[in-house]
Image (cartoon, rainbow, N blue to C red):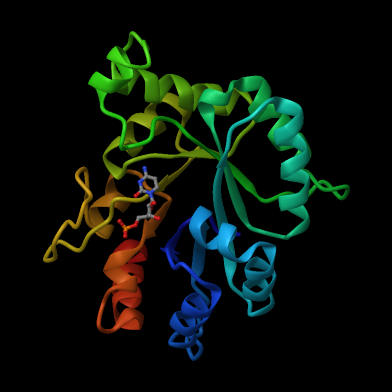
Length: 235
Ligand code: C5P
């Protein structure tokens, strides 16, 4: 799999809504990579993943696992059997937990989905991290450190803001994958996102996969919006 793509965040509350939306993409030669998050997965279970895989879509299952290593390992084994293409954990779950996740994910034939880690959620501010969570470092140092821990555990990359992609590449090397939400077209609104950039700049800064939700899902012409993202990001 080429490690550069646009991922559509399918933040829908039911499988019907998701499948209706994807009907619009049925004539496209390039099958979009989709992100399925907790809302849709908890509403419809593994069935929606099986259905989308059957229709030829690549899937990033964004469930952000964080538990004791043994539980994460067993859960990852189940997710791996769904044949998804990318899954994730919280880096704060420790290096041992991330190693266990990778073990659980690796199939008997040695193949596995890409495994990435969330460093610090972009909803966590430096102030909250220091005062509430008692993490006594700067947010950027924490992100770089968690990214290095993820690499040490053998993970493929991290989820981060596009504005942090350069920092992650500096800490972990250019082959360490960055998956970045917070993408908006240069000529459109920000919704509730704060630290955003557009697809072209994201690529320049070092994003490998951009995750794009509302600029595509809420567009009057989602296929055109998707194609614009692809053109701007992949060139
Ligand atoms: O609609 P929008 O493009 O803002 O959607 C971005 C997607 O990426 C959503 O599914 C959101 O939950 C997810 N996300 C994010 N910021 C993070 C991690 C995930 O926006 N730090």
